Length: 139
Length: 139
Length: 139
Image (cartoon, chains in turn brown, cyan, orange):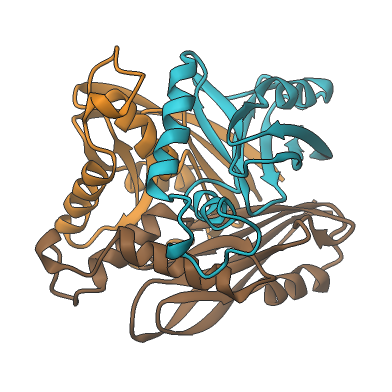
């Protein structure tokens, strides 16, 4: 059993979903791990992870809009407002989605479904550099 | 350290929760893994996973109703409507719940709490066959 | 490759977030695992896990308030009411957050971001003792 760890940097420019499937698939392919478990972990509390449909770009836009409705930028709702109106909604959106995701690896590939893509879900308005840790365990 | 991978098929017939705890427990019991980690991964973006109370069937009905209220079938809210009024709500419901779940294994059994059951959460109205990948690592 | 399992007891006294980062970090530090994967699993359906900002206590208060708004204590909304008005909202809050969380371990420490803390998210009003299983795998 062997393991490999790698840290990705993902540049974001405003709220929405950023596809990182190919970068993760490349990390898995680089190491000769036929069967195992791949873990993705994002090191932030105002950005998160999600798996969504990678076919129709409208899905990821509608998803971003939904989170805008459920956690609106309205400072009257929150105590924590010093970092701007998008900050507390960002923490809520992160809590409702994923900080970590593990995917079984078979035949040296992630066992994703046909339409599944792995996304960084940015919840802040400003541009950011986000850090994602990848851990691969198997043989 | 050894590992085993298996794919379950789960037949669903409309929105709601489908208990797969026994099928997963049987997969764990079949392999002589005393201590380890079991991972469940669903290969879809309009069905998901959740752990909920397996005692009172009203809990899973109320849970399904809650998601119907929070992500209503109202095409005016969404761009992605070509696959029917239940499609974009399905993606939202999946994003709010789990695509993957890992459970520690001790004494050859999953370390579930007394009332915990593992469910496939179907978010589409039509009948579907859903695929769930199980990965067991340990010794 | 070695593995270790441990069960934490967490005393809670009403809805809100309880920081367990230090207890988990101590479990990781006790075992000489340089690189690996740490899994946290909570054995309940009315309490859950979340990773949130550990710097400003207002963030965790606002987060708790948000879940109170989205899943209100209103028995007219639910069938499952026998365990009190906070019970079905507790199951909903648990379904929207995490039952399990895995964090890569590097240089004998969890790869948490600077501001990330791991919390038990209590969703019931009464005091409770909650059980959290820790599983560490690596070498």
